[in-house]
Length: 57
Image (cartoon, rainbow, N blue to C red; front, side, top):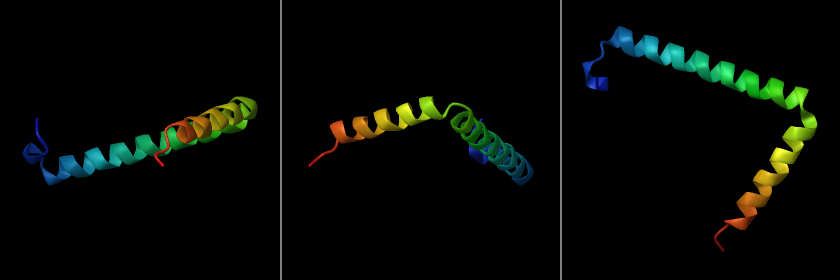
């Protein structure tokens, strides 16, 4: 099923569900960050190191 096959109502419903999913995902990430600060700090440091490793100069 392609996007062109969807009615405007289906598109609105899909966007509404996607927005709700993204809100829930952001909320879960925030909660995880608050509950496990040590782990999230470690993940942040590792992500920074990965970005530095592959930076094009």
